[in-house]
Length: 373
Image (cartoon, rainbow, N blue to C red; front, side, top):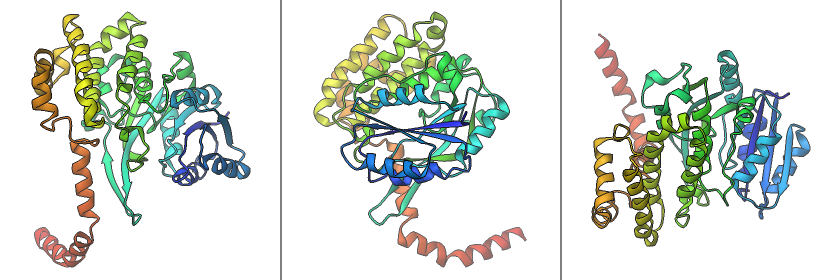
């Protein structure tokens, strides 16, 4: 049995795939299984995978007709023979010690899953990489301690992703944790995360960044302005899973609606202007029903978020004018935080900034020595 099975769901990523594959096959944890799901790629992705498989017998390739991210991931999850399972998106890459470190931590603490901080990155036309560090939690006290996610719904507030950690295979199989099999790449990671947190008993997050998450792929689902209702479908799927167990639903109901609200806001940022007003009507209708059935938990929302919800419920047209058209949710695909991060990265990587660092290096050193005296 391999220690970690790494699933790489692949569709038309020939531009980035070699960097991804190199980072996986060179892991310091050699005892791994690499499951590459080619989801009907029409470019050179399959040939690249086959070339790597010729030289590495740890690589297993599944070549299938296009069926969407969820279908491919579920095939990989069923096939996986490793003690733990990891996921690497084919346009991303990972540092060489990632899986050795995560596996050691998972074994030492008998974890259902362990996740770590990560970097988002972009490259410009010159190949320069701009990095932004992403903390899973804003609270340092949440790190490096074992917690029970199934009893602590607040942990859903951690940054949501599936790929910055590893998951015990027997845990995934016991609760039949799988992805929603909707077409394309349609935010199916949301359902997977909700299931792992709702049913997990022993988990940990690490305050060390490993995974490298690309943000400059124009074909990524986060950049698709036409994928309007994918998030709504995903949260219908999540609800169906949670309500199977009344105790689980009651425990996670409030945070489910908060996360749904945050992701619907994100959808308003992402989709094209021509879809925003239509989408807002469905957004408002879903949350009016939540108000009417008393499913919302005021304590899960900040004061500003709750005010926005009330405005959305009571006057959708005013919400559209003051929030969406004013740019609160309509300012492009990237969040305000990402835009600020990108601006900061651009400044730090600029020639003038780097020149300034060199010019003032000696004066800074003298000043620091003077302060110590």
